[in-house]
Length: 319
Image (tube, rainbow, N blue to C red):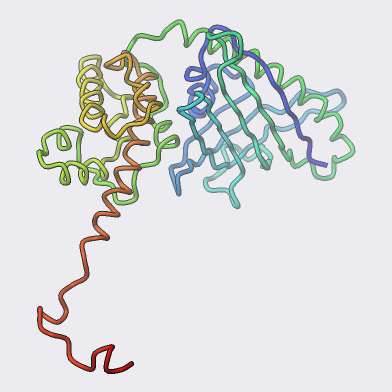
């Protein structure tokens, strides 16, 4: 029987944005989660991101478990209305990369999910709800599965404690623009449009005068790419953050209240705030994209008869 765990805990002193960015950044999770040996990000496909990770097996009496490896798809979502994030991981159909070690055992993550939201009654805290349905691939040792299940509770407790400590440290470091935010997080939260123009920039949008043309350029803008601050200097951050604000102002009349709220503080002061503004811009972009597509579809049919009277019998004669 595959063990399933559920947990719910508060993270004081850190908002949902901070906690989410710790959880979603699998590539750097080993820095604060001692149970994770290492993890590689294997690329995006269909709005999800590939993750290959190795974790330490729980310690149990009478048996020493080998480390486990997982190959998963990672997906994420964010609600502007209630500041709630969702993260889900599920194993791929087949291994997408070579194992880290020959001595490890491939496991299967049926589903791991996290809901990260503001804690009620405490504006500075976060509520984390998580579930995990992991198949550790015990094989012939199925009689010892109860030991793994019991040890799993201790693993979750250690995970919650480590996340809480890391979130407090990360929250204390806010306000410094160039940080350690996962550059692919915004791509998970707001996948770029299918017909994106990878060479287009915010300056291209702002430099287009006509409304219809401006909307078309904006609709094709790869927002996760142009707002990826992972390699920016402090000066570059300030410049790009100011550009994001100007981009919003150009389309502010089309924005919802939730989208506009991401810009109430003006220019983003750090990567977390810029990420939220990116999600708001992507939400706005989707509606502009729909409007552009609808306008293009209403352009009329081609003139196949070159303005000549159509031949044949009229409807009245046929009737």
